[in-house]
Image (tube, rainbow, N blue to C red; front, top):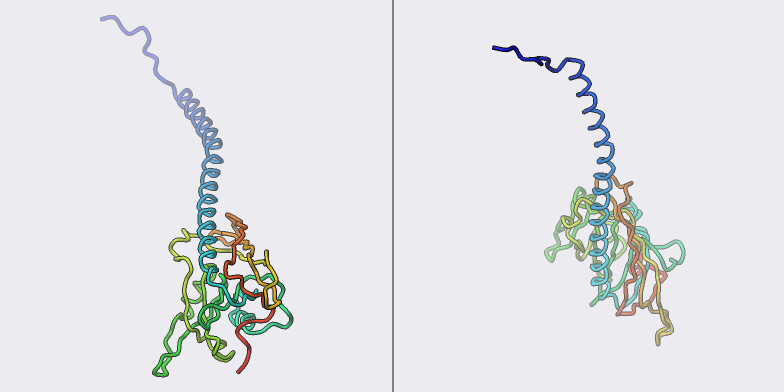
Length: 247
């Protein structure tokens, strides 16, 4: 039997060189792919945020169709619920036609406060005189960053309001539909108006500007949406709060 002419195998040096080259190529590929993956994830998040912003604007449009009496701009997105209360029932000076929340009268004799800020603990008076819990402290805190509405009767006193009594409460958009995002900031501005037969300015449209942020990191702004919302009910502009601070 003739011996093999070439019985030389792979040496350790050659193996190490091959592994080194493979590592360099893998690192280069990872360096090129990582930014692409990050960019793809960012675009996906921004697309979802834009979808959420569009849905929120549409819900605001539907809710504000009922605003037909008076409308007041207030600042009620503070995290301090006492500050929210003070914004709701009193102003130190006339409120300009802009704010982080809207307060408006709705049929038949109620005031709605619409915003995405802090919510105090809420309760409701029952016919038998007992108090029914609407939101406890934990659930109230969890509403910050989500669109919601509080309804008050025009017959309620400021003390009732300060003690957390409401006529009703509702989330405008289901929390589960926010897809791990929330509203970082929201602002309303008067846009269009006309002088009515009563001699008062009546708002025909307003502008809303909202930012969508990550629920895990509020500093990460995913989308900023600006939209014009018509007010078919043409509510009269009020510089003073609609729920009067009387006892």
